Image (tube, rainbow, N blue to C red; front, side):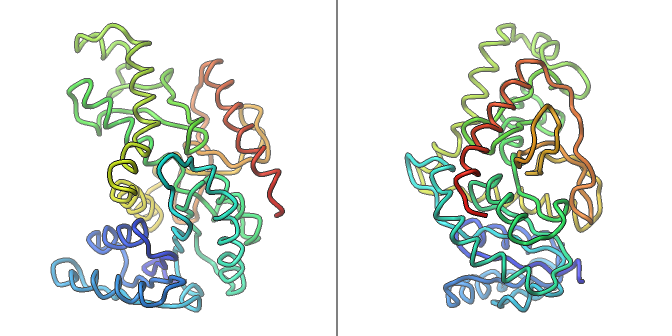
Length: 313
């Protein structure tokens, strides 16, 4: 297995933007692009390859499923796009059908690396990929709420006038309408969020948190309404997840992971903070949640479980 080799399955907006971001990072020495439209994969590979002289030496090309065999990471962005007024959950049946053609191709090639699911609804499709691939759960992960968490940090940084990298907070649960901002353990460089807000002259905490959480939840809808798709933010999230895996960083990121009794939740994939490294998920991180946040997380799990029950896996 070659950790310096990645395969991108799906060359739409998100897939192409992610490969472009990965090319600039210099993280991989080889990236193969696979798409049902072979010419599209070839065109994107050519276009992105022409930026290699400005980055680091690597090989970017249109490939096929044989390229999966020795890859360290397979990233799946293939799927129908989310349309205006369409929720991520509305996409489920279309994209499960697509995954039923993709995942067996990977599983049949004795794949030893990590599958990173990015297509939506990401938590459900990660569950689907785990079931169809037969791979260990720790090696089949979803991009989860990594982007939502970045959006939360960005929004808080704008609100407080502080570097977003100093903000420590998570969005957990479904990557979608039932996601939860974990306010109870949020901080800015170790200072509890409410205390830091007051230091910066903000005192209406509940009202501000509600507004920020609503804004974060609706960012994707707003972007899709304005430009029909969101892809740059998620491409940066994909790059970050790949960095953590390839460099074995043991970084904590809120990725899609199977629940096994945590917070009273069983047999559903949710986005939760996990320690991530070269073998995928090492362990989930038991962050402290308020009673209200636990109830909201359980409701989020129920939403996803109802959808999963309808699927024949």
